[in-house]
Length: 209
Image 1 (cartoon, one colour):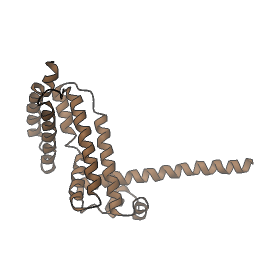
Image 2 (image 1 turned 45 degrees about the vertical axis):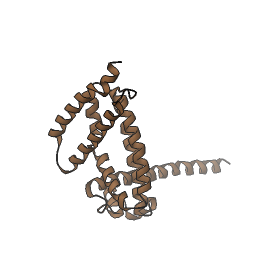
Image 3 (image 1 turned 30 degrees about the horizontal axis):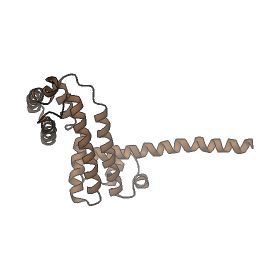
Image 4 (image 1 turned 90 degrees about the horizontal axis):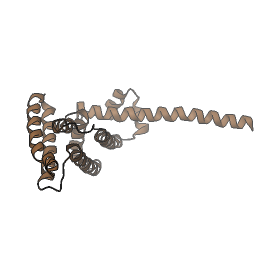
């Protein structure tokens, strides 16, 4: 009995590190898929390229993700979860200016860049399109709710919902512009102006109640 119990304990201890390594490999592959999408786009992000970036063999990559579509469908979910986590971890609102800067920052980082490449890929890949559409709809709703909270906005007031959505649409446009050039100087001026508009509109509606 004692030897059998010891053998089971060894198996359990041996299995855990193996599972940990497997999870770590999968995580590296997903992170590399996002990075490769951001740096090389869809056409340049093959399984081989992602595996090399992750430091694993192509065989190991295909063990986790048998096809390219499997890999990037999982990457869609990973990007969505990371963006959701970024939303949940946004700091409490210090000022309208800070809140607007924070929201714009969501659209100018590597996760948004990777998401854009996924959108483009999904427009041409039937396997990706339904998943990307559903996840983006969810992220859009979460982002809007977070924006309302950060801005202290009251959407019961006329025009406030449209003001918040206009801010997010503007932030997305700044993210697109940032893909081609360093748009930070112009972005600072635009953010400052939008902060004033939101202060007088969305945030002001709450303050005036």
